[in-house]
Image (cartoon, rainbow, N blue to C red; front, side, top):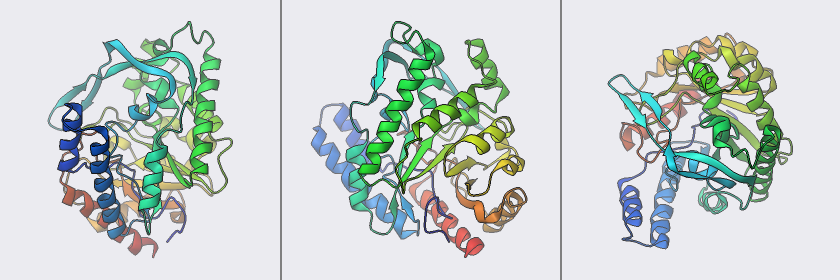
Length: 371
């Protein structure tokens, strides 16, 4: 087993919110309870979910993203210079085996120079840091790519950034400062969540981006450069991973396609220590792209789905790990769910017991495979 992240048995980050927390969020939004009361309920829920993670044997623990409504926008809107458009929404299309779902959040606007005005999630991380006992506290934040992917150039005020290069420079600088400050708080396990690097494998997604004026054939190269710039001064002793999936909203997805389109540049150039990758069904393609993974980099195979409660077969998971090991050394592999269980506050369609049964299965399988 590994004593440094990513661990042989790991998970992406978000966890189903308990009913008491969902009720408290509703009460706060309606003005029935004050902010400090909501915080106390969040604290208690996080203490319990950390205990459960450690109880099943995980070596890393998150706060389940319990203080967020969304895995990415709660962070992005706290960057200086970025806000919601008051009169415009975008449509994000998801689907599952039964239905198609349209998610229509407010559009994002870059209305001023991007800057870091505060250490985002500082209080959240320090609470987690002081709560864990046996596990390494892990913090998840959206990658810089996510500030651009959803709206592209249209979301950037040309009066603020007439030069796109200046936008990218400021964005990476803000992220670099955030990473530095998190290191000062004792964060040794940080994850950049990035759906864009998986979405770009889908020809239909690339077609949509080209229609809005982006260079979809080369966008992943730009994103890789900007992430690398954000991590250029990464604190010593901090492990940074990235997680890539094709959408996760109420057990639905937004994109399909193997990792072939981005794989060579992704594995060869992205300066992270490990890759959490979605591989729970045929939408993700085969393991062949893993042939580009260089020595020293870790791949966390997301073989256990978070989109439904049915428990996977341990033997089937072992066979798939063996298949992946044909393309990258098994010592560079780990096991996890394919995504979070609750990327947004609504959560996926499974129970809390099913969620923790899956996490326990991952721990047990990893112990049997790697010892």
